[in-house]
Image (tube, rainbow over all chains, first blue to last red; front, side):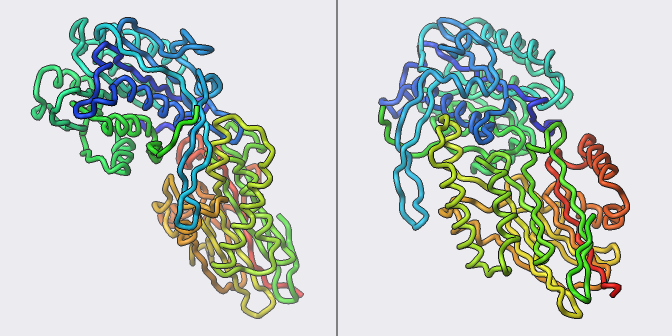
Length: 289
Length: 255
């Protein structure tokens, strides 16, 4: 299980599910300058960038991944706009070719002689921050289930889809447990759909990362998210280890009361798939335009 | 199979096999074999699939390595790779690239390389080899494995080997992983140069002692071997990767 080679003939699917409710416009605890929605949009853009680069073969992007970015708040639906607008799931080559804009900046790199130089780089933007409305988590998960059902009919073999769900609050439209379990019961020949959940908090609370059991969790909401979080397969555990994140056999893909670094690691681990080295993108750069 | 008369004492029997990944065309194969029977220099390079212009880099490394006149010291090897890398990067000047290709190009290219040179002018032929990455040289005698480099066991292969980088700023650390080796040969000895997937499979066969690999690779036709490796890759017993094999048998000349 979770060992299928990801190829163009047998691609996998990655769904980034993002809470865009009004509270995402609040800052992180202890960091009044940084709104959660702004940071999450930046991380999602970097994650899409990373996925494109992994699939880039010289001047061609190979469709190893089909990607969906679903937001929920005032509305539930695809976060893609522009050329990709309205499309629930997009082959990675088209993600590469149709960012909303490509910004320019500088990146600090080693000069090979113990020093650093800044070189110009371009980086794409696909989604903008959004924070409005309630938290219709059940409706959003139902949308994810619809997308996955359709996709799995076309792709019954290969590495199972991964759903990376990020939220800062409790569902406003019911208990997500049932629909979450239904998603986790979908599968390919290589295993069940992987669903990982990252809860982030505006409050100063102790964060809990990749627990193995729910007894350590503070409340019913945390336990619900734990129950609809898949166990991390071996390859993902290896990726976590490479990032210096403590996980154990049986750890769930679940973070509670996460901070900005938790979000970055959550996406890095969640997209590590077949054990590839996590792509570290948090480098210094100065935006030009 | 080709036969090259090397001296009054020793002949080489050479055989090569190059197979792309299942479902891909030969033109997409990123393994590259280079041979020079006159100088008895042979190399296999394996371009990293994720890297920019990986086949060009693999081709350049293997071809230019066999064209060199002698096996290098570590320092000479490092200087040579840096010069080859500069030329590769210069070949990209003037290209109009998308944002993602530009980023790939900035990271440079990567390939595994193994090169071996044989010395056949004495009563005891010998070899010298250099390798970085996970393409391997296996020295076999009477169906047994005498030596393997740079990796010695099938479980030593990882998904992230240290490779030959075209960007010399990465050489400070990567060149510390270069492995050199040498050995002496007897009549009938076989040297195998192999890219990673088939090298790992081959080392497994030696470890489990369930197949005479040397005999297997010589007694089957190219088509039979292709069918065999396609079936093994389909069944997942060999990773679906490009396959490059150079089989060099050292034979005492009949003259």
